[in-house]
Structure formats: structure tokens, C-alpha cells
Length: 121
Length: 171
Image 1 (cartoon, each protein chain N blue to C red):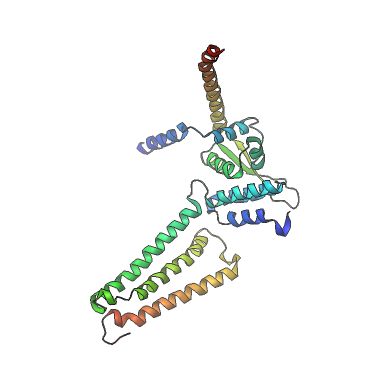
Image 2 (cartoon, one colour; image 1 turned 180 degrees about the vertical axis):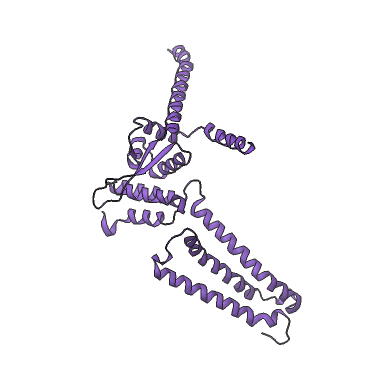
């Protein structure tokens, strides 16, 4: 029981950690079409992140159970199978939650700025 | 340019082979992905970024942590091995700090340290269930070095033991 409570606290701490801007961009890119398996390089191109930033993010997302990974099964001759990624259900929930938070924060920022902008005009 | 001269791919493959077993899947993933990067500059960027990730993967400590642990182990084991000999030398041998054989004890300390540094990758590979016979040349060189280092150290200690014990006229 104590151990469970302790684990819950740990998991809680992990979930409450706010992801970085880069992690958020990867989550949102993956959430665009959650059923679709994605490649690492495609995600790099979409998010503008380099491999040195992208892969640590993918590794951490997979470690936390937010990212599902797989290997290509149909492989053209002469090429190694590529690693594929898509969000898990919890990952998708998190991405939606973060996207909603971001939209809310943007609206609030806009609302705070509007009086100032109106004042200057 | 690809093929034999594909340096980005070689660099990334070299780094990926050094990833901890728990992360080796990601090394293979980056390497496979590099084949899809066509532009030369982007290939280098991807390979350099991937190399960085391979050497310092998140969550495991990576190569730097492994190196640090190995150096600490080598230092501790060497010190534990040499400390009794230093004690004997000071107690029964030299009895005089100005004539203390620093060079001798430095060698006696360095040899076990080198032994552990050379043995550590082999031990890690065996523990990880890797096939150590994959590169027989490297294995033979390593084993020969380990055997020679062990023989040299035990022979040296054996030869110097009378001096450590204060036997007169020993050299």
C-alpha cells in the first residue's frame, strides 16, 4: 500500500512535469494524425528539430509510455527497416491536454495584450 | 556520397555500437533513418546529432557515466591492491620518506588500473550477452594484454616482496 502510494506520487510528479517547447512540438506533430506511424526524419523535418534533439525526446516519450514504437515490416530490398512512432492513448490524451492548455494560454496572453495595444492606437 | 566513403553513416554506426544495451534499438533506428537523408549537409547534421545521442543517451548515463564508473573502479581496486604494499614498505622497508620508491609504486598502481580499464569493456560485453568473438583480433590483443599485465604485476610484486619486508641488501 505504502509502495503503491509512493509510486503514485512518483508517477504524479512525472506527469505534472511541463514538457519543453520541443517536446510539445513533437507531441503535437504526432497528434496531428494519431493513427499514422511516423518516421524520425519526417518528424525532424516537420518540427524543424535536429536528430540530436529529436531522438532524446522520442526516447523519453517512449520511456514514459506516451510513445509506441515499431519496426517496418515491409522493407524494400537493400535497406534496413525503419523505426516507426505513434502516440499511445495516454500520449494522445496528454498531447490534447497540452494543446488545449497552449490555446488557453495564448487566448489569455492575447486578452492581456489587447487593452495595451488598443491604448497605443 | 554513399558507399565505402559514407563517413556520416560510418560515424553514426561507430557511435551506435557503443550505446548501452537498453538503448541499442535507438542506435539502429537512427542508423536506418540516416539512409533516408539524401542531402549531404543534412546527412552530416543527422549523423552528428545521432552520434551525440548515442554517446549520451537520456536516462542511462551513457558512455560518460560508464567511463566514469570504470575509472573509479580502476582507481579503487589499484589503491586497495597497492596500499598493503605501501604499508609494508613504510613499516619494514624504507622507513624513510626521502628514499620512498615512488616510481616503483606508481608502476604497481598503474598496471592494475590499466588491467581494469582493458578488462571492463570485455566484462560489459559478456554481461550484456554480446558475442565477444565477433571481433577476434581485438579480443586476442585484449586478452594478451591482460595476461601480460597480470604476469608482470605478480612477478614484480614477487620480486620486490623481500624489499617490502625489509630484507637487508635487497634491490
